[in-house]
Image 1 (cartoon, helix red, strand yellow):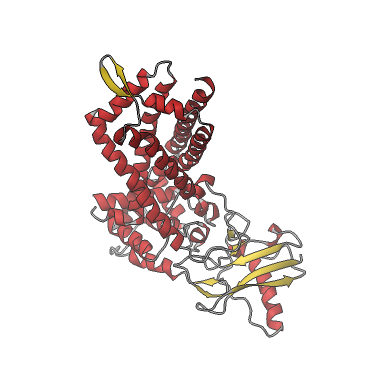
Image 2: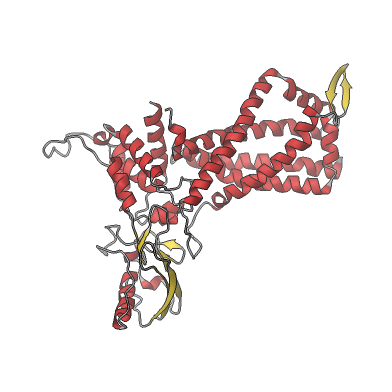
Length: 246
Length: 222
């Protein structure tokens, strides 16, 4: 496949960025999107120029490190996959692909396509954990948990914190991320102990960091590589009202 | 509890509660308006008089004005904050699969606000604070002949077109707003959410068709 790439290049956080157009040739349709970028970077390095910076780690779709805004969609045109699991067969020979970093005030650009997503860590630090002393490893069935609640918790825990929800949302809202991190504990007995303090602290941190609010547009759910449902946002709202009012 | 409305979710809660309240008001308003379709102007004038003078309705009116103002106020605050959350936008327009009308809530809101302002000047302020509306007598009691004013307005083509267009945009606002309000309230259920969405569509249809049929009927048949 021969492709034209329009890539956002920005030297550092303070520099003014711009789009630079590159040509890549003989790309295998079976290669991943990041492998295609590796090919491009090798071309650039061979010319003794600076390669395009982009985040990646596991390249197996489970770590949440990669994340590119490709042709107007976070993680590109495939559904329920991260950028590293997007394959070039989803594009056509001769296509022009526009590649941008995540755009949100709380996600400042570090360099090129790398956005600083430490804001998510700050939200987790605010309360996205269980701090009760659980002692030694308990018996798996010591606390009976209904199957449906275990499923809800596991579905929420699938969130890898990649930030696609923020990138997709027209308001740069982090509600789906916060909802997943609240939900994974809220439905379990171990998580209920600190549920009230957790949701209040995480929402306060989310607001403080400058994320937008949710207008129930659904772009986050549509673009989430782990298919986190909007129902978790409704649960986050319920948890928040309960914590504030009760 | 005290600082719930300073949070983004609290502001959304306020928007949702007020939005549902305003939809209920629109349904009541429509009920009264439909009386204009009757042959005699008396029913509409008596109903309008009741709505303007009944003590319970007068108290309700305070909440209604407050509701409108707060819905607009919180909506603006949230919108400005949302714009500030992404100071540098994307080069390529987002083409994620989303609820279509949710993208235009602020635009439809501005159109509804303009309509509301004109509507208030044309009918509410005219009858409350001026002598522009004629007085009629029914059974020895005086009433404002608001029906005559409405019939006169709905004979003006530009007014009819503007009125109908406003309700088309109102329907766009409600199609997203109604179901969105329940999601904000925390109601998301496998069985009930599809029912809520259907009720939202039915309410929107009743309001839009109901309000637009009146000027059309008056213009063509009265």
